[in-house]
Structures are given as structure tokens and as C-alpha cells.
Image 1 (cartoon, one colour):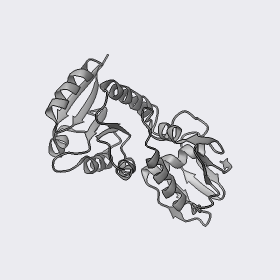
Image 2: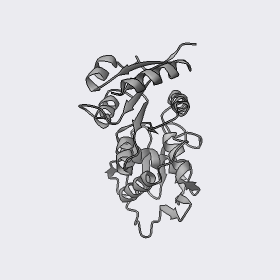
Image 3: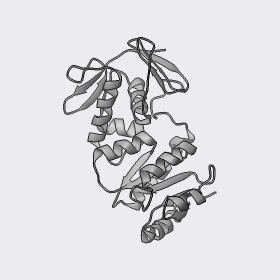
Length: 240
């Protein structure tokens, strides 16, 4: 079997050696670099199947490097991060990180995340597990329109409403599961593939931002309804 090629960007040389040895035991060939300059020298589209990117790096941090990678290509990105504020995690999601692993972590979890992310990447970039909306569909709800290919949201007056990557992915998850109660764990798993750990506050912030884009009153929402102690429900009829 051909090894999976992964680029690891982390300035902790001990972690790079230990993690590289461990991942090779699972058929994951790891090239380690210590900073953004070395990452740019090593990386080329198609050379690596996945990038593991530490958030805290000398010089350019992981957020800046993630943004640069995402502007160049759609390579799957897993960010390594210490426990921080939810807003930092949301920022990572918005600029295109595909998953997070929180330090300290069990390397078995990282292996599982890598394999899961590569399976989803091979199957397409849309939310998983539903299949109710075909790829490329434009769908509507309450006079709004969403195009999956262009990732455009159009309001009832025909105006385009800009969405971040994270906002679009969360909205699409709701569109695939209308009028169903979804817990924060389910939303995170469906939107980002992160099954092992849920960042509840991150989802709350994204829902709040999405409500603003949809002109949905947070005190009395008509579309994105909060089910106290449970999660959220998208209360709209979705149609082609």
C-alpha cells in the first residue's frame, strides 16, 4: 500500500520525531518542518495529502499559514492547538482548517482524525452522512436561495449575503437536516468531522453569526431555534 504523505509543521523537534515515528507505523509518511518558510519550501499542491499545522509557531503563526495554504489549494488541514478561547477556534474554522487536535493528545486519535478526514476529502467536500441534497444543487428556504457550488446565499430581495467557510458549512448541515433537533456534538461532527471532542461555545458563536446573516432575531428566532439544553433546530422547509 502506498504510504499517506503528510506535512507536519511544528517547531517542537521532539514532538516531530516521536510523532513521525508513530505515524509511520500506520502507513503515514511524515515530513516535518519547523516554520512557515520551511513549509513553503517543502509544500507543493499534490505532493502531500494532508497538512498538520501547529497554531503557535515562530514568525508566521498557524492561522496565517492556514490562510496561505487555503488560498493555494484544498489540501486537508488539521490544526494542533492548546486549549484556547472559542473565538480562536472559530477563526481557524473560518479560514479553512478542517479539524482540530488539542494538545496534549493521544496519537491514536490523530491517526483516526487523519484517516477520517482523508475519507471525507476523497468523497467530496460537502457535509457528510445525509445525502439528501445532491452535489451542486441550489436549494431554497423561506424565499432564500443557497448555491453549493458558488457558496452564495441570496436573500429574499435578491441580494448576495457573504458567508465565511464555517458559516456556509454549518448552514449546509442545517439544510440537509431541516426540522431536526441537532446537538452541538452532531453539528460539529457533521460540519467538521470532529467526533472526539466538541467545542460547544464555538458552535454557539457560529450560530449567532449565521443568525445575523439570515436576519433571524436571536431573542425570538424563526429559523435557527435554540432547544435549551439540547441543541439547535432549523425550522424551515427546504426545497429545490
